[in-house]
Length: 560
Image (cartoon, rainbow, N blue to C red; front, side, top):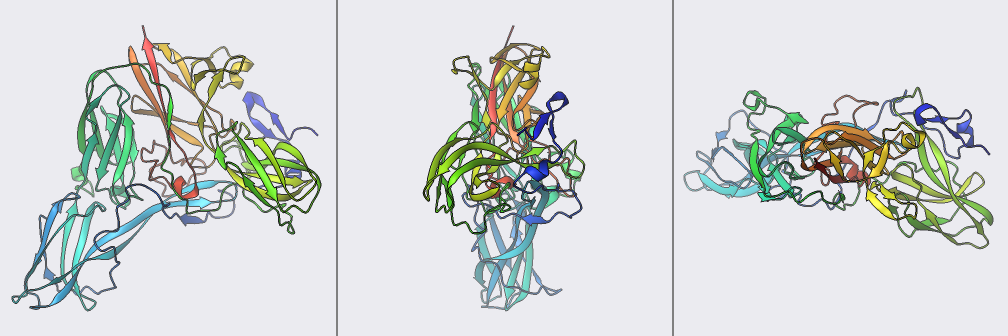
C-alpha cells in the first residue's frame, strides 16, 4: 500500500485524498471550528515544591454579613511584605467578648480547552474568599491587640474583618507589596541565578512579572499555583563584572510607570550579580520541571474509536515515557484473539497555518508485528522519531484495536553521530547554508561545534517537540534577551532554530523555555502568551495534564 503522506514543496506534509477512510481513528476538526470551545479550569498538580499553605488556620470562614457601620481596626504598619510583623488592634467593641479575625485571600489557576487531539490555552481564573485568622477576646474596655506576620500569600490589598455570630463588627486592611531576593550574588558565566519574587496577585494586572537582565527581557514569572511567590532560574551571561537583575510588574512585558498604574504597590526588585570569570562554553543540558502528579487524566490521541467492545485485554509498558529513539516493552495480557497482530503508534499530522476546516488528523505509524498464540504477548518497540507529547501504543488485528496504553515522548537535544554511530555533538552546529536537499532535510543543521566566529550562523536542534498550545513552541533567549521562538509541529517534532553568533569574543548563552502559544487558533482573554515562562517548572498549565516540558541551556564560544 502506498504511504498516506507525501512531501510537498519545501517539505510540507500533504494528506492524500481518502486518508480519513484509511485511518482506524476518527478525523478530528480543529479547536476553532463550528463548536464553541469548552474551557476547563485546571487544578494544580500535587507535588509542586514550596507551595505556601492557605494562610493562618487554613479554614475558610463561614459566611458573614458586613453592615454599613463597623469599628475601624488599626493595622501597624498598613503596608508590608511577606514575613513582616503586623499588629491589629481596635477599640469600642463589646467588653470581654470573643470575635473571629478573618483574612481575605484567593485561589488562582489556568484555563485550558482539552480535546481528544489537542490542548488549547484559554486564559486564567481566580476566586476570592476569606479564611479564619485567629480568635481574639476584648478586654474590659472593649479593646484588643493581635500580633502576627504577613503570611506567604498574594500581593495587594487584604481585607481583615472582625466577625461575631455571622456579622462583621470591625474592618481593616493591609497592602502587601512585592519583595525580591536573589542567590547567589557572584560566580562564573553560566552560574544558575535563582530569583524569588513574592507579592504577585491573582488578577490580571498584578499576576505577572518580567525578569530583566541588564535591561533585556529574559522572560516572565508567574505564581498562580504558588500563592503569589514566583521562583525562577536564569544563567549568568555577559562579560566579567557587574550585571543587574530586576523583577518588574508585567503582563508578560514590563509595566514601566508603576506609580501611575492601577496597582502602584507592585514595586520592582533589583539584585546585582558579579561575573567572576569566563571559563568557556559548558556542555548543553536540560532543566526538567518538578515531578508532579497530574490532575487531568484525559490525554491527546486517547480514543476508544476502533476499540473492540468485547476485549478484556490490558496493555502495559516497561517505561511509559522517554525521548524519541528510546525503547519500551509492550506487554498485553488477557487476549482472546490469535494470529498476526500489528503494534501501531497513534499520533497526528498537519499544521495550524495551511488549514481550512481540518488542521490535523490522527495518523498511525507501524511499530511492528507480533504473532499471538496464547493470551499474552510481550514485545520491545522503538519510539518513533516524530512528535512529542502524549501518544497511544495500540495492539490491533486488522482495523480492530485489542488493547492500548499511553506513552509520553519527552523533548530532547538532538545528538550528532558520525558514520559509526558515535556521538560527536549535541544540539549545536554550524549552519549548513548550501541550499542542498540534504541541508533542507536537516533543517540547515550542519557540522556539530560550539565554537564560532562573530557573525557566523549556527543552529540548535531538538527532537520530540509536540503540537498542543503548551508544547508546540519554545521561546529562545540569547544572553538573557528574548529574541523569538521556534515551533516543531510542521516538522514532526524536529526543531532547528537558526541564530547568529554575536556579542564579542567569549562565552554566550542560549536558553529555550516553554511558552503559552496564543496564535492560531487564538482566543479572547489569553494573557501572558508568546514569551518565555521562566516559572515553567512549578507554574505552567501543562503540568496539570502530565506535560514535562523542560528548559534547554546551551553555550557557545565566539573566537577571533
